Length: 328
Image 1 (tube, rainbow, N blue to C red):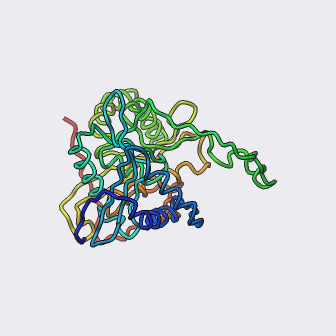
Image 2: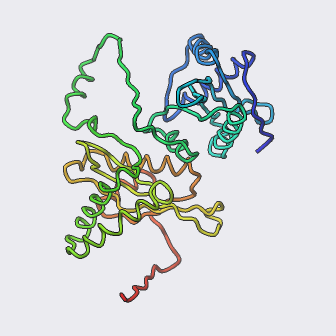
Image 3: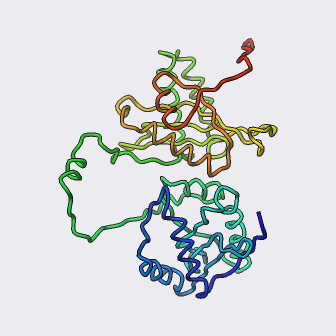
């Protein structure tokens, strides 16, 4: 990585800002169509020239590599930096540039005497996990609302698609579990074990109900990331990513490895692509975090899903072995 410097952007950077924005959001997973250059230019002016505007750029070797467009906002709880748009050039993604940019912004706004940074993002995009990784928290009391005022015109194909039973999981929401979900995670974990083993004893169930809340309280959102699907006011599916730090080797130079645990979907929600969606969210998160690989042990039912997502059979020159310790 070359020389990095944080600057405050003025009007002279507008053309570079527009080009960077188009570059960052025209590809996956956003696929925004900013082919109308005039519309894009006006949008940049709209968001960058607000009252109390505060616009940051990250310059790498003389090139604008990232930008944050926003404003200073005064509120009864304090004065914040409200971010309207933040993006990193695809050429610099996956190299830690985004995290360093956020750290420099945090230093700058702290020096200005501001109290916090506020932003919004889609919870089904990799950016959501990126912000989580960098210390941002969900504001559970806030929700974004939108009403379209465009005329509603659907083709026959679109109407048919809307009426197909289970064609899309419009009743299912995807996100990352938090500490408020612990009891639901315990419930799903026990259902998973019953499904996997056929049955469990009352003693085994009581033992899990005792240990799991303590474990989730300690590890959830840290070493253990739970990707979940919500419907009907409860969790209906979960997949866990266990992050493991090991001594570095040629496969993971940063020492970060990961393992998939307990992929489970309630019976009434199976066959709707929920597992695939959870696993793709997990892969996106792992890539943002800079993990080198994800290991899993597949059931016969899960094997085709994981193959489709890019998982490969492991060919080992070592033998798997296990020592079961005697119970005291």
